[in-house]
Structure formats: structure tokens, C-alpha cells
Length: 361
Image 1: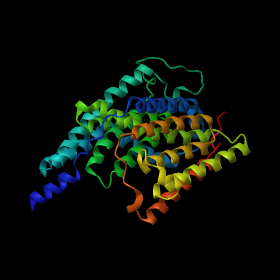
Image 2: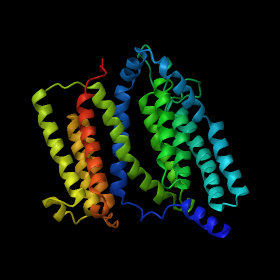
Image 3: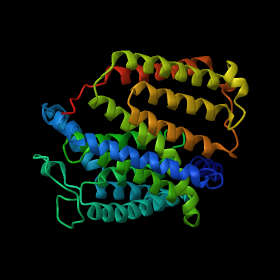
Image 4: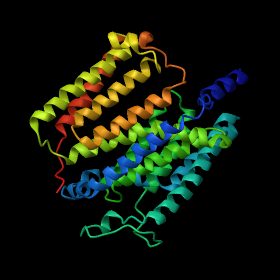
């Protein structure tokens, strides 16, 4: 009985299957351009977002922010890893012990990377940017270490590794990581760009630690390709928040076109429509994702976001070349597909309603 239980526990916490061969150089380069372009866009709107938050009394969120501060603290993250290591040792769960060790390694690696970047970039903390007249430069001084967010980087790196132990509940550690990142913004400790940068760095480091270290180029490249859409989606959200609708007619055109693209992507996903029958290259999953991403980018109506979305779609398409196609949606229930469609519609409506909510100047 114990052997059977050990086997089940080991299989549930087993590392993911090896990733496909390293994505092609164009896919990695395009994904890197999307991430760097997203950071450039975020740095342009970081200060207006922080000023907007300062104009409101967020005392109701203070306790939540304090929890995020404690959860993302290095001591807390190390304690979680050590608890998992101890539990694995006592219960003779080798898989748990390996995950705990990998999470400690991820924490150490991301700490080195974060502290190096912080002082090489030398971005001032939000509290030092009230006047607006500030510059970036390498520095070892306290307060000039805003980018990237250390709490977010460490939490995402550890969450990426710990998610291996929760195959069906892997969203839980990532949800807590989102909480930590959001708390760094509303507490005024970091700019949105710092948090998104920390999230990307943490995911890449955590993904590298999820695979044999000798394969770091392959795992790191795939992590960059996979995190680029998330980085751009967050950037697009912040961008529409700070940019008003200038041309109602053109905005309506972009909205309609975006809805058509998103709807087409959903039809391809469900295996219906003319496009679904022609989606052989890369599989229906790739075609569906590209159409949906492009549609959401077009809905923003912002040339910068649309341009970055086109680069992202090219990267995703190239990365999918030669990779076995994802399973079709034939096995999915119509209820699940309906929920997915409602989620896409909600995303489109949210992008439209949030435009210009935070004044840029």
C-alpha cells in the first residue's frame, strides 16, 4: 500500500515532460523584442499610474499589501521550501524533496540576477520620483534599485517550481505570486514595469530550474517565448488605462476588426468554420491563439500595442513550427468552450471600458 501511495505521489509531483527542441532563433529574438518593447511602453506610463494610485486612499488594501509584502519576503519563501523539503524527508517523498531543492536553487539564482540588474540599471524607487526630473544610472545606493521587483521575481520563480507539486492546482502558487506583485504596486514600492519585469525574470529562472541545468538554453528560450504573451497582455492593459480614445470612428473600426479576429480564433479552436479546415500548419491551437492574440491587440486601438502584437504572433507561429500540434478541441465540452468564449468577450469589453481611465498627464 505504501509503495502504491509513494508511486502516486511521485507521479503527481513529477517534473513536466521535456520541452521540444530549442525554439528557432527568430522566435526567440522576436519574443525578446516583444518583452523589451513592452518594458519601453511601461516605462513611459509608469509615473502616471503611480500618481493616479496616490490620489486615492487605499488604506482598505493596506492589510492585503502587508500580506503580500510578507509572503514575497525571502525568509517566507525559503521557509516554504524548507517545509516542503522536511515533509518530503519525513514522508519519504523523493519528488517533493527534489522540488524543494529546485525552488531553493531558483530563489538563489533569481536573487543574484535581481540584485545585479537593480544596481546596473539604477532605476529610482517611486518615492524618489515626485519631481519627475530623474535619470537612470548604475548605482549601489539605496533607493536606486527599483527594477526589477525582487519580491515579484523571487515569488514567481519559486511558484514556477512549486507548481510541479500541484499539477491540478498549479494556479494557486501563481495566484499568490500575482497578489505579491500587485501589492508592490499599490503600496507604492514599485512601478508596474518593475513588477512585470520581475514576473518575466522569475518565470524564466523558475523554468530553467524545472529542467536539467545543462539544458538551460532550451528551457530558458522556451520560457521567454511563453512569457512574452503574458508580458504584452499586462502591458496592453496598463496602456489602455492611460490612453483615451482619440478617434471614435477609427476606434470603432478597430473594435469590430478585433472582435472578428477573436471570434475567428474561437471558431478555429472549436474546429468550426473555413479557417479551421485550413489550419494545418502549426495545428488549430496555434492558429486559434494567433488570431485571438491579434484580435485583442487590435481592440486596443493603439499602434504601439498592435505592432508589438504582430511581432508576438510571428514569434508564436515560428515557435510552433515543428512542434507537435496540440490536441483538438473535440474532447472539450461545449460548456467549457462557452465559458472560454465569455472570457474572451469579457476581455474585449474590459479593454474598451478601461480606455483612458487613468489620465496620462
